[in-house]
Image (cartoon, rainbow, N blue to C red):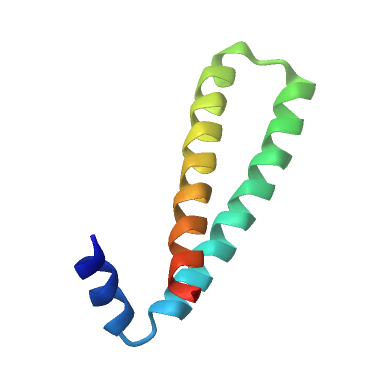
Length: 74
């Protein structure tokens, strides 16, 4: 795994890419909060399963990107 991290650190602009991905993930998180508020008002049961799955994916992606982002900043 260390070789892969060293390879990523050698790529030009990798910090900018992770900055953009991290900001995009935060934007998607806030959009999901907005979508969830609208779904709560409408109370549609068909979308709740899909909405919960998207929550899991976004939270997983957030932690993975945070881990990589912090590892590359150190």
